[in-house]
Image 1: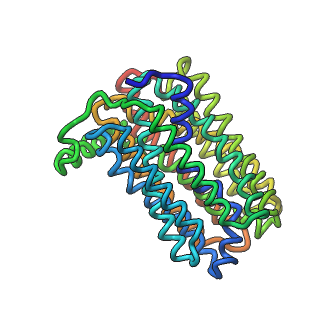
Image 2: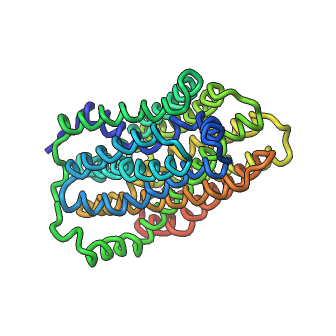
Length: 401
């Protein structure tokens, strides 16, 4: 059985970061891809949105598979799929080929986040999971903090294909480390986990639980606000504000620093305040930040600060919402932790993909469409907390602001 060590935490961090890194690292290259493959913005945006679709849908499979066969073999399979499809992305000659390769890449990438979080639940238990997920989230954010900067530099120096060459090398290193370092962590393997009736029954058990349903929506809406920014920011900063790819990477890194601050504070306060209070604080802050951004972009001056300042607080709020929502949702379900993590990941990525498509098709000569999506996501997260999470916690005599 794998012990809770610093090396394990570092490895899980890279696994959970695989999905975000696969999008953040090549963000500065999106305009270059549009030009090089002779396509339009909406088609290039599909390389992001289709990745989110696969990243979410694949998690519905990896969770039950890991509940049946264990985390380690399923994780290794996913990493090999990611490695091969990253090579295909690097050699794509048309936008259609790149979109298809990105979808296959997402089917491999989704093994990292869903199984990484399930491993945290396996190893750290229900009480320390929120704290560990917060710290892992803070460390994980270093990848997208550095990724757009490094990715922008690679795009300028070697072209957009270099970003996928880097992802290929990164995934190869991950595969070797998992093979050599990770023992099996699933002590509750279920021989019937892949039976259709059991899969449907497990998901039904989760969805009829109002607490799980509430944190599922909090997590999903909060992340969809971030993805609205991820999807729209390259064109807002580069095309509207005139940033270079490197400067856009630095601007994106500034937003990620807000997420790091939120997850770090959440980890430090987890044992003192508890996951419910931290989730509530993040939901309120996210709604306020989103409304502020929308107000500034509609009425304020045409300036990058009208987007960057409120987005920093929105990212801070996300750093408080996500780890605590996940810990609250998976805590009561040790025997189906894989299914609980996969359903949460599927909903999170599916909603984010939809938001990404909407933002991609509505971007114009202003940042207003992106701000509308971020504000709407923040308000929906807060509404989900107030409608489902807060009443259940109050009824159970747990602290719920």
